[in-house]
Image (cartoon, rainbow, N blue to C red; front, side, top):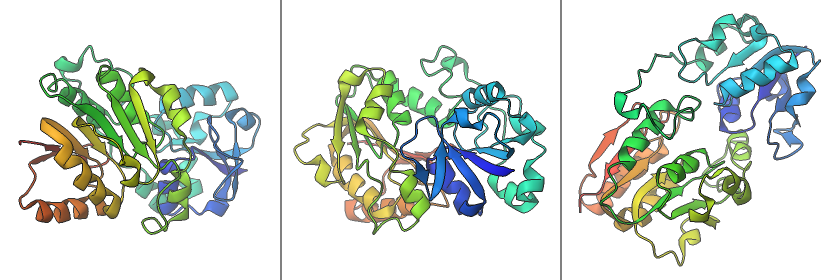
Length: 317
């Protein structure tokens, strides 16, 4: 019997950072495998789980509804499935998971599972184009994104994201702002070694390509990809912006993003600084404090209670 982990992204890296040793994992499972191994362990396609002796399956992906259906089809007992990112549903899928505590221990399990609350949908979002996507992702982050995008009609400029990863957030921006150019900046090769010394976190962020991101965009013709390390990847880009998502996890890259994007953000536009309130990633908040000193005044911002601790900055002039 063994422990299996579904997902080879940042959720898997966080799982190891919380204390699960990689040598306890029999295999990782991923629908979209980027390689044969992850952190020295084999990566399986989901079909290989059928008939496997699963002691505990830990799901680190946010696609809990889809993965739950796949697990049922593969014959994996619900009692042996632990959803670490059990999205905003009335029923907690982990209520039936009896295998987790005996396998992981109460202390580690308590660190892995955050407290959850029922989120009531505002009437203004009842007919959202992101319906379904919000519930399988970060509800507060995506609902806030939609409300912000509704305020951009009079603000000129393109949209952008620095730190695209697999493109889930970029897909939402593209869906909400289909008429805007969407500039996507990412190394698509992880972080620089100077910024990230965690092998699991580094390897998790190498699992995407521009082609894979383009495939999931609803309006790919609007996308402009800028692969490479920022800000060198921005050379020749002359656009101004109405909306910017800045999600690069670490201080130096965040500071480079603020220096480049903030002067190019049109009045009335928004910059979403992801992980500003994330205690595990102090770099973005430190970078903002450094940039405000350079800029000469505080930037007006509103913190969101989303999973990553986003700070929404609004350019006044």
